[in-house]
Amino acid sequence: MRTKVGSGAGGHASGTLISDTERSLARFEAAKLIAMLGPRSEFWALPSSLREAIDGGSNPAAGDGTESIVVTADGAQWIVEVRDADAYHYVDRTSPDSGLVRQLGDQFLALSHENVGDRY
Image (tube, rainbow, N blue to C red; front, side):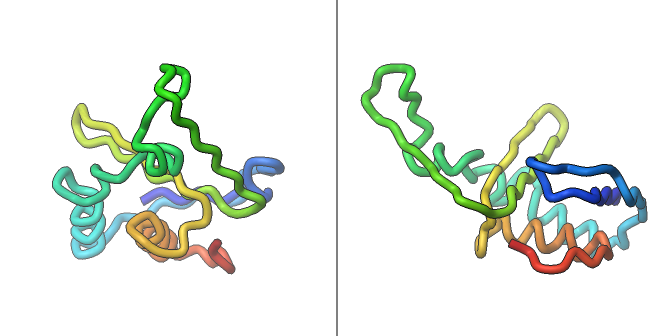
């Protein structure tokens, strides 16, 4: 597992790389991640974006009359990307407080052994 930590505050002030560490996962740690992210896991069925989750992935540009607007005042962007052979899927959420994206983020942060403070 490779963990990179920056000095900044995310997208608006990313800063510089202050830590870049690598460690091997124990077999049980890897097995837990595989169960959460494997090809038969719930992850692959999650909508990639909140907009897609709200309107079922409809495309306003296609003229179907639907539109959704998601407004976020502040928070942390949690993105989980997975490639399994030729399959690729990502999920992007803002400050999830529950659900699989939160569980995955918490798991990755725990495995990193980094002290990241409050998680939003």
